[in-house]
Length: 100
Image 1 (tube, rainbow, N blue to C red):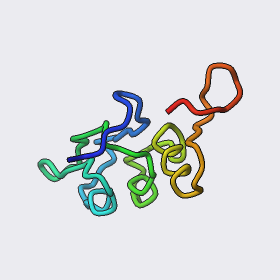
Image 2: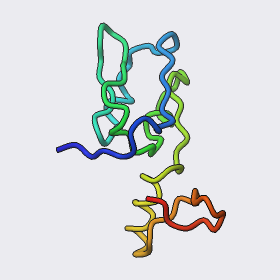
Image 3: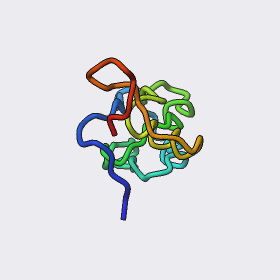
Image 4: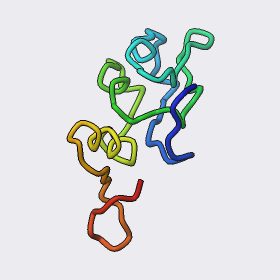
């Protein structure tokens, strides 16, 4: 079963015109968000993206952009690593408390 985060909130973007089809982004993506299609990469499962940024950081052609370190996926990972409550800083009261 694939992980799912919040639907339709991921910042992942792909500029197909800049993509050369090298496939490095596919290799570094931990959740299988991308696949090769007719010698170009395409996004197949946007909602599985955890916004880690590995794809964008490894794209030599700037075909992929993502705001890594944002959103609830980041908050959940940070909370697990620090043994604390997840906090993505998006509470409506401005306190930066948990919203995940």
